[in-house]
Structures are given as C-alpha cells and as structure tokens.
Image 1 (cartoon, rainbow, N blue to C red):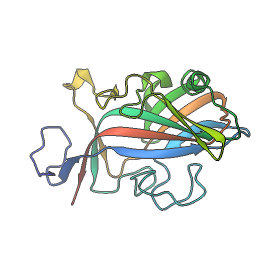
Image 2 (image 1 turned 120 degrees about the vertical axis):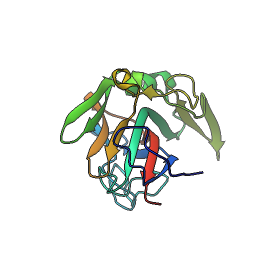
Image 3 (image 1 turned 90 degrees about the horizontal axis):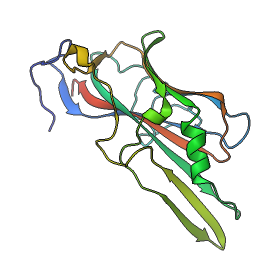
Length: 214
C-alpha cells in the first residue's frame, strides 16, 4: 500500500505519497520504408497521437501525462531500465527470423537516458539493457490456412529482477531523484536507420518509486 514516509534519500519530498511504480512508454516502428534513426520515449503522453501510433496513446502504451516531465510536485526515484520488443505477426506464408531480428535490434542500437537539456546520463549499447519479465521464445498459429508467427525476443533471462541497474555506488547507492519540473527522455539511436519489415512495438521502462500528492 502507498504510504507517507520520512525522506531517507536527499531531495526526496516527505509530503508525497510514494509507491513502487515504473514509468513506461511505447514506440511503434513502421513497416519497411526509410526506417527510424532515433526512437524517443516519454515525449508523447497518454491521449496524444505520436510515437508511431496513428491514434491517441492509451495507458497500455504509456503512463506519462505530460511530454517529458512529471509535473510538480511529483518526483521519481530512478533505479534502472528495461526494454521490451514485440514483433507483429507475419502473414501470407512468410516467416520472420528470430535471430535476424535480435541482431537487427540489439547489435546496432545505442540506449541513452538524457536529463535536462541534453545531458546524457547513460549511454550504452542496447544489448546491455535486459528485457525483464515476459514470454520466452516464439509462438505460431494459423488463421484460415495462413501461417502466422509472433516473435518474442528476450535480452537475457526473462525475469523481473533483470534490469540495467542505475544507482551511483559513489553516492551510497542512492537512486537519481527526478523532480516534476525536470525534463528527461530515453532514446535508442541507430546508425544506419532501423528498418523493420513489419511494425514492431518497443516499450521502455524506467524502474523506480513514484511520488505524488495522491
């Protein structure tokens, strides 16, 4: 249950209600075309159109209510990151190559966490960011004689405890405090552009503890 508690972390507001709640956001890559050079997260809030989606984003895609900020007096204690990828079904008798998609996504992508204007706090190859919990392997079925395949890719063993740990050991292993007025974003940068044969949903999680007035 959420509870009000005294701050054990510097800059943590004791008057907020704190609960274990990640921030999450989704991006939908196009099918084919020129692809994308940068996949941004946490910039298009719920109810807005963007991030590759043709209709307004819902709570299944994001829990951001403002673009790139939490809004005052909210705060977030950041502990780590996860990235989840789901490739859309391939129809018409074609099949997708799981290993090829894995190489495509992870071997050429660079993950960044950026705070403030353009201060890069984390910059690592995408293959260092675990998937976390999720399905393992792939599933296939047939609809009216047409084979369909859904690719489930996991970077590391799919488990809730697997994430990129972002705490500073030089500062007593304290999480980063993100204030409501502070801008932030995560992004995946690809050189050359990421070109996906089918639409692919990519979800980014910022793991931590969320503080709000209610």
